[in-house]
Amino acid sequence: MGRWDEQRQPRKNKNLPKLIKKIIYLGFIIVAVVVLAVFIPRAGLNIELIHRTGDIETISTKISNNNFYPLQNVTIQFDNGRIQGIGNLGPFASVMISPETQNINFEKIIVKANNGQIESIKNR
Image (cartoon, rainbow, N blue to C red):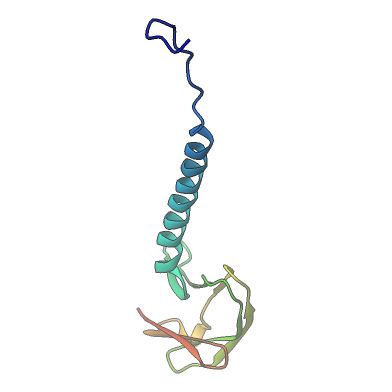
């Protein structure tokens, strides 16, 4: 009893649950950083111009709401043409719009939302 030649009993690792808990928290932090790094630069009202050539040439505009909140009263205007109302865009929603035939050679697209509080302009 208490002698140096007695065989020692292996000690159970009591820190293992704490280590697993820290690893899980670290994993959540890494996932949160990656998600924020992807979504924050892309947040907002985006305009994408899609031009397809072939037998029939088409021009379309994709308007995307990359926010966590909906956009109200979204409108689009090609150059100084007629203002087209889109309505409401929910979070992470998008809509495709084509210009009217008289505005097919437009130079500028203006998209407004929330009664003009949010505005995005894209030049061709």
